Image 1 (cartoon, protein in one colour):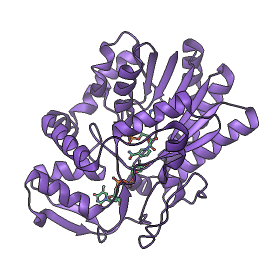
Image 2 (cartoon, protein in one colour; image 1 turned 90 degrees about the vertical axis):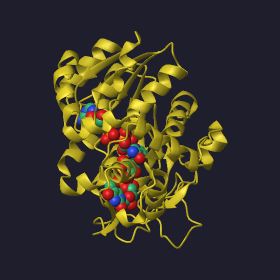
Image 3 (cartoon, helix red, strand yellow; image 1 turned 180 degrees about the horizontal axis):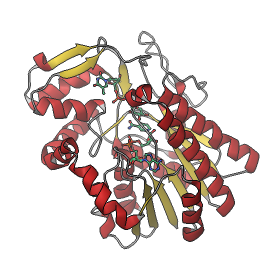
Length: 340
Ligand code: NAD
Ligand code: TDX
């Protein structure tokens, strides 16, 4: 079994690579990543020690490159994590989100059609459903919730989902889609809420909380997400969407205060700043489909997950410092050349 993992040098992709090397040590893996600012080749150092793991540097939106790769490798399964993933960046510069998230996904789908695969899996997000009101805790996103996007990021992810389903219906391509809630854990780029707040708290810098801090996110430990994707790809039904989430809703301010308390830092570091444009109020997943069909349930409680996440960042200060200094980008540039 040969698996292509795109975006494997990013946060969830890196965790997924290590999860799969352990869960399925007999498979062969190719990780493709263009090493944007969010990719970190050093994350994959230990994976590259495995004989059944190789890296390829290239963009999913580069049709010629992707078709050559597929012609050479004969993949059985393609799992697409590669994306521009940060909402704030999509507000600043939507174009690159369309290029990677929409065009890139369409290139992968075309390559899958041409060369044949057993499964194309699109890693999507709960943000494609838009948001839920804060004062209706009885409402959740199900797989039937209409797509109703707020940001250029979520619009680009929804477009990729629509293309994926269109290739299933029109061309009979064996696809699946998973839509997960907010992830946290090791290797998350310090632009996202949790690692950004850890980084700033450790430096006694102000922690910028958007708006009133009462927006709600449904947090899932990244390893639980990885296990869910593995299940959907191996055992989930073709042409289906599976929501992934663990009923772990928290207001942003609650998360920020938890981080401060665990690091022994004062709440006075919190600074309320201007709200994000179009800021989604609340995300909350109904995971009954994946639970009922595949038996998936989250294993890591938030209280344990946030502790081990904070410990990881404390134990891996060099990882964070390399990002702050830009050293990781120089490493990507020089080492990445080996894999073009
Ligand atoms: P990330 O930004 O940390 O990583 C993205 C990776 O994709 C990086 O390694 C980057 O270099 C690579 N990449 C970007 N453009 C590329 C291109 N054109 N070709 C090849 N590689 C490219 O993102 P993440 O948080 O790990 O998210 C991974 C996937 O999961 C995304 O599709 C995202 O939409 C989805 N998702 C994320 C979350 C979350 O909470 N982080 C939740 C649900 C879904
Ligand atoms: O500095 C900040 N201050 C703040 O209050 C940042 C970076 C965020 N926030 C708020 C905005 C959100 O309500 O925290 C919440 C979480 O923000 P992000 O970490 O940017 O995540 P979010 O916008 O919820 O999107 C994430 O979850 C779904 C991922 O980035 C997406 O890739 C994923 O699809």
